[in-house]
Image (cartoon, rainbow, N blue to C red):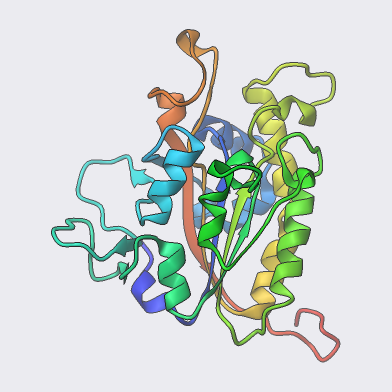
Length: 277
């Protein structure tokens, strides 16, 4: 576990949720070499299997923002990266960054961070009162249909929006950037030529697309400051296993999620603005 208490204040914070991505799909994509950019970022080149605290997007993100990230799937009491201050917590430790607020977004805002939400699925689109709850936590939030689940260029559009938002913030200002990547959510069959139904294979194709689209985001972040990054799924989904379809129920393909946390250094630039060799 990273020492979040030592990193908050000096590092920008990036939190990416790969909405609906199954753990087994993420691992198969790694095995096939379809996600080389993510593989370079993952500690040890591998995903950690964890259990999500929620079995659909809204529940999972409410827990995440309260400091309950996916839990390691091994026995024991696991210290958390972030935790709200409340009496009796048994998973707050010496490396946990503790915030005196109801959610991490407000907590980081109180610690001087500018908070930015790049929306993806419907719970972040601000088209309804329900779709406004989560993005309203942030200083600024962005969403358009071009970043939603039906656009085959959604991740590229989300990354471009995020880079644009970062460019408006002074480098001396620390940032909490949250992205809810929509491409893995149904209908992900749009990422596999000839496919008409969603399946683990079409979700894997969507993940390969996401992988090809994210490098500019990490480059933009590393030009600003060192980065504390969390990349994970919020929940998985069923494609007919034991008769189950979708999510919002408890099943191993839903509660097992890929998770990674890591830091990245700031990359020095030459006078021309290009990364130093």
